[in-house]
Amino acid sequence: MKLSSPTYPIDILLCLAVSVLVVPIVLLSMDSTVRTILGLPFLLFIPGYVLVGALFPGKKTDRGIDTLERLALSFGLSIALIPLIGLLLNYTPWGIRLEPILFSLFLFIMGGGFVAMYRWYQTSPDERFIVSFSVTFSRSTSKVDLFLTVVLLVCIIVAFLALIYVVMLPKTGEAFTEFYLLGPTGKATGYPRDLTVGENATVRIGLANHEYRTINYTIEVWLVNQTIVFNTTTRQNDTLTHHLWYVDTITTTLNHTAVDTEQPWTVQWEQNYSFAINKTGQYKLAFLLFTSSTEEYERGREYADIASQKFDSAYRELHLWLSVE
Image 1 (cartoon, rainbow, N blue to C red):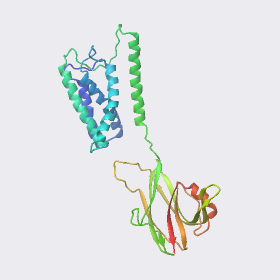
Image 2 (image 1 turned 90 degrees about the horizontal axis):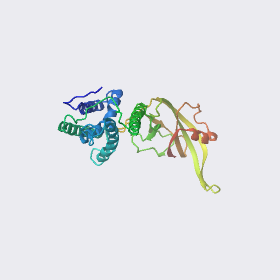
Image 3 (image 1 turned 60 degrees about the horizontal axis):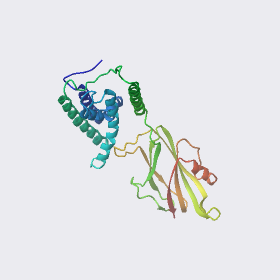
Image 4 (image 1 turned 60 degrees about the vertical axis):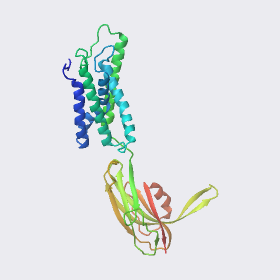
């Protein structure tokens, strides 16, 4: 069976029509399934196909290529063209972003498609390439050619199916949690450093969940009195914890939020936290993050004996150095 027309190059026209549909679908962020169905050929087949159509508008002759060769070249050239277009965009003011890549490919396909149609019309009607969905082998075809043709066809089908599987598979990037401390004005400046006994100080604690799951976060606040000494035996610095006092616990539950480098960074969770120290000395106010609930502790009680275990088990740790007079 053949889908053919002696008047119009319907294969090139179909490629152009798909390309025209892809642009608004991508820009308007329409249904992901439709984007995948039309986006895959737009990226990995159509650019190479219109280029092959411009180079070889005729059917299989001494100067032409057959359908399977045309398909194989279309995939190969498309895969080779996209990195080249990205490399060129890298040296332009627009850079490698979604919109520049989309419009660059669209312009390339439109230009290549019109050239392919022009050359198709310039070719004799008897020699024009006409799309056919049937694969036939004449008795004169050698066994080697037949074998290579079948292998090529199988490779194309397997590669295309593997590509669909990879694209449709849910993407899981690096899982991590943003955990940060800001000054009282919401900026990374103005942190409390020198305090007097009983003086109120404020910091802003922030979290963002990029763990691909909902997490019940626990933040424990501890006041630590410690010194760092040089160990002459190991030739390394050792941290000696003299006192560890429990201060407070903060809990919150956050859903996963995707990292979108195309959009400005946004806050997921922030909370102002005020504290006061009722002891003089040099201290570290530690904020320990856990991804589950923790034990209950008594405020003001000494917990120096579990300092190492507590800090080692924390998922993340932030701290402020305080001088209290």
